[in-house]
Every structure is written in structure tokens, then in C-alpha cells.
Amino acid sequence: MFSPIRAVIRLYRLWLAGAAGYLIGSILTADLVSRTANRSTGEAIDLRATGSGNPGAANAVANLGRKWGVAVLLGDILKGGAGAQAGRIIAGDSGAYLAATASVVGHCFPAWTEFRGGKGAATSAGTTIVCFPAYLPLEIAVVGGGYAATKSAGKATFSVCALFVVLAFVWRRFGWPNAWGTPPTLGLPLYALAISSIMAYKFATAPEHMGDRPK
Image (cartoon, rainbow, N blue to C red):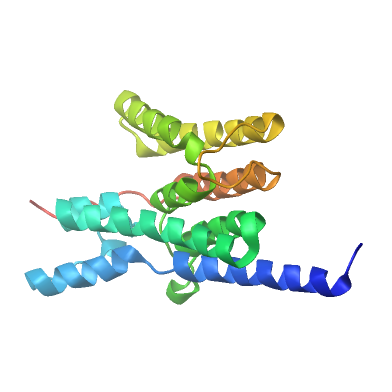
């Protein structure tokens, strides 16, 4: 029997899940890591004004060094997973999908930096660990194979996004097992479509490369 009170509580929990996902995703790991790196080296390297201008792992590797780039990568993956899991705790499986999407939105468009964020690839991978772990082996293979073949992170990302969306609809259609992840409800393809569209937009509109820090 429909209960208006339960419906309101459900919507409120979904709102909380989305807000939590956005807040966690909008913590820009690259900014935190670059500040730490700058204090360690005594330099003042702004990732937003160096190299690709993207506050992400690849730009951090090129201009801060490998260890700092790895720190950015792991931090972005972790926050994506944490955002999705927080949504799952707050509002169940639907909350996980909503918070996962919001985490990627928060990373790509953080309010604290005039909505200038990263491209979302690592954060998206983190949400996949919680929401679509069955896809992880394919994601790793497609990204690795696509980059090896094209030497282009953008082309590899477009490929993995397309496959991500297709397989999300397939998993939903056939109800296949999803390891420890959320059940393949309608939320799965909607989440896949949303974050893939965001990442494709970010890669398509990325600024021209401005040159890496001299080695």
C-alpha cells in the first residue's frame, strides 16, 4: 500500500545520497596532492596552468612526478568508490547509482573551483568497483588495449564509455550476476549513460596541451 510518508522519506534519503556523492566527489585530490608536493619540493606548480591544465593523475605524473601522480589516481578512485558506497548506505541500491553519478559530477564540476574539475575517468572507475564490478576486467582490458593501439587517452576513454553503456543495458536486460555490486536494475544503465556522457564531454572539450614541466 502506498504511503506518502514513506515516499517522502525515500526521496529525502535519495537527496542525501546524491548530496553525499557530490560532496565526496568534489574533493579534488589533485589539488591536495599538488599542495603537498609543492611543500615537499619548495616549488609552486599549478596543475591547472601546466601541461594539459587538467587536475588529474596523468598531468600530475608529467609535472609533479610518478609517485604524486599515483597518489592522485588512487585518491580519485577511492573517492569514487566512497561516494557510491555512501549512497548505498544512505538509500540502498538506487542511492548507490545516484551517488556514484553525483560523485563524477562533483569531480568534473566542483562548485569550490568555479566548476573547473577533472575529466572523471579515475573517479568513474572507483564508482564501478561498487556499482558494476562485473565490468571491471573488461574496463581494464579495453582501456589498456585502446591506449596501446591509439596512444590516445581520449580515444581509449570514448571506447570504454561506449562499451560501458552497452554492457550496462545488457546486464540489466538479462539480470546477470554483478559480483558484490548493486543489482542490475534500471539504475545501472542510467548511471552508465550519465557518467559516460559526462566523461565524453570533458574529454571532447579538454583544452589544448600547454607543455609539461621540463625534466
